Amino acid sequence: MKKLMTLEEFSECVRKGVKAGLPHELEKAKVNIKYEKDGCAQIQINRPCSNTIIHYTLTLDYREYLSGKCTPECVIANILNSRILYYVPEDFCSIDVSDFEYLKKRIVSRIISSKPQYIERMKNRPIKFFKDMPLAMVWEFHSTDLCHGKEEIARMPVTMDMVNDWGISIDELEQIAQKNNPLLRPAQIRYMSKILSEEGYECEEQRDIVVITNPAIQDGAVAVTYPGVRETLIDMLGDDVYIIPSSVHECIAIAKSGAEPQYLYEMVCDVNRTVTDANDFLADDLMEFTQDGRLVSVFRRLKKGSPIDENHTFV
Image 1 (spheres, helix red, strand yellow):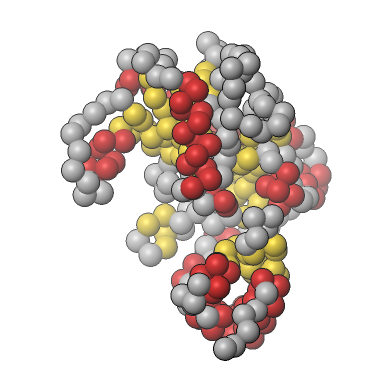
Image 2 (cartoon, helix red, strand yellow):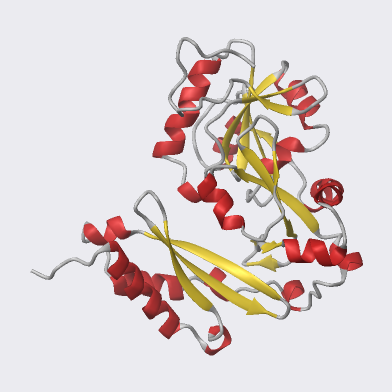
């Protein structure tokens, strides 16, 4: 019986195979492996493109290999056959990162988890942490290219080097993105029952749960911070709302009347550990709006990270 590879051996085998199999136009791409605390690994492919670098990150499912469902060769082939790997937005190819007057019309924001393992990925990136919430804001350039019949969001990050060269502050960067967000990545707010019905599920029309994202349903959770979203949600649900940070791609709104905050919180924590992809994790939290429209945590953050207990109090 052939001896199974360790995670490190498996990952290095895949890395070498991908690097060797990249076509001529990707020969200068750097291929690295990043190990996660949960025992998984990711392959990171950084493709130079004009004055920019396009980042691709794909999870290596070592558990599939251990269970006999795949071989390193299969993983390598799947990565090399990934269509997104060969797609570079046309407008990225001609970007001059020193041309701030052009670029400032394309800067948008997205929200991520403020847990250390996610912040570590944002080296040399301007970051703004939300007050009293486990979230952070980062910025990137919006791509308007169409790919494979739908809009693709290619992540080209705004870096601290760029911000310093432009001579602007992080607060100014945030203000620029606040103006661009609703124009470049408008909020898409729909009843969940309507979404499920369009996807082929049999369900009665209900108006008790609303999904907030953007038309691409990618990095859309930030839409919950847009001006006017709170008012729209209250109008649709007939009540003030709790916000469930289901992933970096979307948030869910539920009317406060009849809802049990503790149950919602525990549900979020359970889904994050059993359903949500680790790369899409946003927060173990439950949020609400203040009267002036600012998002805050419903519960105080637990220092030990344990489930809500009888001593847990509202903020």
